[in-house]
Image (cartoon, rainbow, N blue to C red):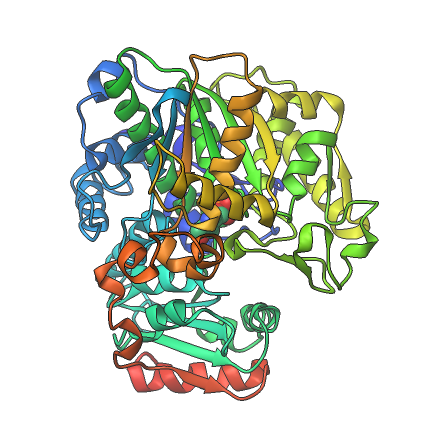
Amino acid sequence: MAAPTASQRYLSSRGGSYGFSFEEAVLKGLAADGGLFIPEAIPSLPAGWESAWAGLSFQELAYEVLSLYISADEISAEDLKSLIDRSYSTFRHPDIAPVVDLIPEDNLHVMELFHGPTFAFKDVALQFVGNLFEYFLIRKNAQNDAEDGKRHALTVIGATSGDTGSAAIYGLRGKKDVSVFILHPKGKVSPIQEAQMTTVLDDNVHNLAVEGTFDDCQDIVKTLFSHPILSKTHNLGAVNSINWARILAQIVYYFSSYFALANKVGGSPKIRYVVPTGNFGDILAGYFAKRMGLPIDQLVIATNANDILDRFVKSGRYEKHPVSAEEGEGGIAEDGAKAHPGGVKETLAPAMDILVSSNFERLLWYLALECVSEVAVGNDEPTQEQKETAGATVQQWMNDLKTVGTTIVPDSVLSAARRDFASERVSDEDTVATIKKVFTTPPSAPYVLDPHSAIGVCAAMRIIEKSEDKDAHYVSLSTAHPAKFNHAVDLALGEVEGYDFETTVRPKEFIGLEQREKRVRVIERPDAELVRAAVEEMLEVEGKV
Ligand SMILES: *Cc1c(COP(=O)(O)O)cnc(C)c1O
């Protein structure tokens, strides 16, 4: 078998590790130096890919894309195909990520990424990640090499404000040798999201409702990951968007939508992808697709009032708080979004309410390689010295962000970023107005957008308005089904004639969901020790210790 290529080996964005296998990158999640794993080179598409891949199904395309990043020595072609097939067998739509025409005369399309089990785009990645974890553990246990004779097992612990939790639970339910603990702030997630999580009754799924806030839940998870005993006696795993496998799985739908559009309009369309962005995972996958050679004209970052990325694209300053926004410290922030003392603003699109976008660090490494190490953009493998310079640069930038709250990149880096990315920031008012406009105005009426997807569509509409180029096609990524965020949808459409949540939006899968049997354990105080004790006890009941 062939040795892994550079794109099948992984390094840390902060320069502390090189030459990791795909399995190591996935199971570790985060590198020891705090950096994120990225492939040592971005693979180029094979000659003739456009005709060879044109007729492939989503699953076949996934195999072609993923095998460029995973050595067949690690996962055989047959096993990878089977992992992919199982991961997408849970989707309700045969195309997995269908592209629909929203406003044909403006070449505006929506790619629906919400046909997975929890009705949100995170399923596309987490269904695959769950199967991948199980695959690696089964293999380790078959090799039977555990030092103490125990089975290899993974204990996944995560915090959720509602959305990621259900996608993680559905990705990991029933998986052999994996247990999952999801903490949510009690009474602070929407009833639908709460029901989605707590009605999963598999033995390996544990919901912990913490009396406290989402920030409390996150702090507890951080404490547990560095807990001197728990982190040694258990193999702890994370499923947040820093896991490389999640980014990888998301690259596929940029290819599938490219072919869907090429099929529709004929020839090679000029495409701009508009992506509602929080942690920069979804859109980073688009960057990989573009660098691999998919002809993407532009990637548009669409943020809500938590706009660190929009501010970066406009200024080259990557900073937690804009200099002029001291009013962001608590109280009411501009455009009516409620701000927490820590600075995150609560918007109608909660899955994008972040202060810092973790995956942005991955992009920064490639920009540092190009601009600081001066490696021409192409997909040749850089030298070790060039890689080390890029790693040291990112380390410095992240250090500045941590210590002074700001990183200012050189002009060359900003220009390189602007070659691929544009950005728009969308307020809650515009989000609501977009949901209403799309539902009420032909030709898109009566299409219903969720608030996250509406941020993308609003950004796309603004760019279409500004653009001279009438040939470009816009694919706006739709990241959740509107029924998941009924509060914002009701706010936009509640008064509109012909709209009724139950008949217009609610999928049949949600009917009676809230009345189903639930399993959830309440943690009376936001206390890491209480959670640790509960985790140990539940693992014991499960027979995992
Ligand atoms: C997670 C999420 C996003 C943001 O995705 P990132 O990869 O963090 O940029 C957008 N919309 C919905 C519905 C999400 O769940």
